[in-house]
Amino acid sequence: MFNLSFLRDTFERGFATFCQGFVGAMAIPGPDWSDSLKIAGVASLICIAKAVAATRVGDSRSASLVE
Image (cartoon, rainbow, N blue to C red):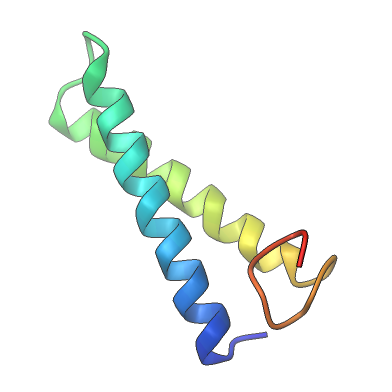
């Protein structure tokens, strides 16, 4: 499960989700920087947990559910 391809794919997905979560949180009025970072961090952790769970469903060497 934790081969280089899986780790690279998981990092890419987690980083992209972090960036999307941060930008999305900053786009709405209300949350400040620290709240936006927390929101992005939680979204990224959920994404990484999903990638680990995906190894049980699809290809065990991939972070994808459909491969």
